[in-house]
Image (cartoon, rainbow, N blue to C red; front, side, top):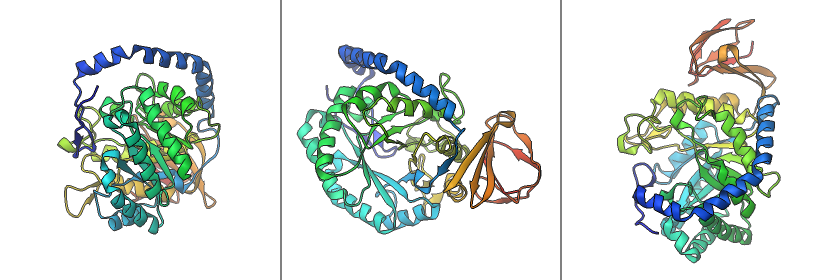
Length: 423
């Protein structure tokens, strides 16, 4: 089954061109594939459950260093000039970047190569996500040629390649996990020949039942998820009982079904789409939030993920985009949103700090860290605001965006994260 591929340049994703009725008929005809998928999960289910429970018990109970390399941001050669992109990434304080290369943009590989080289010259790490479409499933040889050329041209600049993208959504051209496995195996063979590091399976949203069969068939150097929680608003909110931190625990448990014993675990895409951005938003309705809420959720998601000790790297999607980016490119010069300052402040405070402990006063969150011999905290709540009583006034208090606040023994805690420095 094939439908003409149509790209949505406003939201940076394909249009869903296949009618819902046709998609349902297709899935019905593939029932043997889904039966095998269910069988695989039944086999791995007990082990997955045991690993999940162990992960939940261990979360926030062990020291964990938030290395600067754990903070990443996705970029685009089409959003801003390469030099400006590199300068902004350095200003934020991170060194990890990721950008997409689509199979249908193979003719632009030279431009992507130049973009990657410029980022590397500015001291930035580069990862590349390779995007597929339906035609690649039908023409395996063309896909294999594309990934091989991408590895050859971008390999000297890129530290890793994510194989495929959001393939568990039919608009991205893959209609079941067996089709993705064929694409991933072809890429793995080319990667072995070129000596490059691979990451995958790049499943989007909360669909970890796909990991067991894929990771048994294809071995990646890093296991990845496009782990959104935006449809429930705050990352602490539950989707059918699953909060962001529970999803982190299940992600690592599901990834343990693969053959690789000690992979890294990366979230390669997360954001919250913004209200009032119209056709630039990748989602409509409930997932859209204000710029202030986006900035709050960004910080809270990163802390919940990285302090857990389960996630090795998180990339925000992305630096500059009208509908969801840290910067709004609808104006010239591009406007920094609150989330840009929130990200910059977060890295300034947390990069290379050691997570020490978590406290839950009145259901809020107080994460304690140690850096350069000084203990400090990041505090917020997803519920009603409350006053946090401290034994002594902090040496300094900074808001989410890095502004100084008056130190006090009684700190008002809201949904906007605060940094309480020293004592």
